[in-house]
Picture: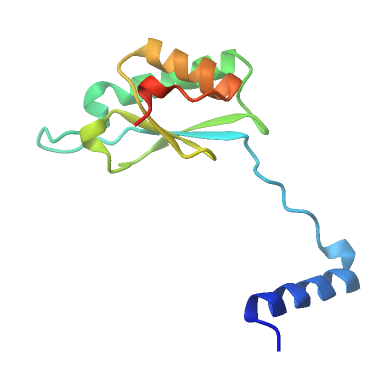
Length: 129
């Protein structure tokens, strides 16, 4: 008897051979890179990314990425995230699929992340957390 996973794969292969028009290849990803900016605002003065102007920096990054032609399907997507639970290291962003976490201080740091990581695939070690 086949292990459970092997049986599922065998069954799926058999179904695809009977109805090949029903199946297509799953693309790796709709976007090459997905950037999440934590823009959470906590109450009572607790540490949070938005205390450091995260929403403004996210808006700047999105505009900059668009102006450089890096945005869109097969390219880069910028999203606002709620709390990413790294408040003491913030402000933070995370870039997928590489799962790289960054902190930043200003627009120059964001420009460096855009140029090095998003445009050329090089991790910015000095900003990585």
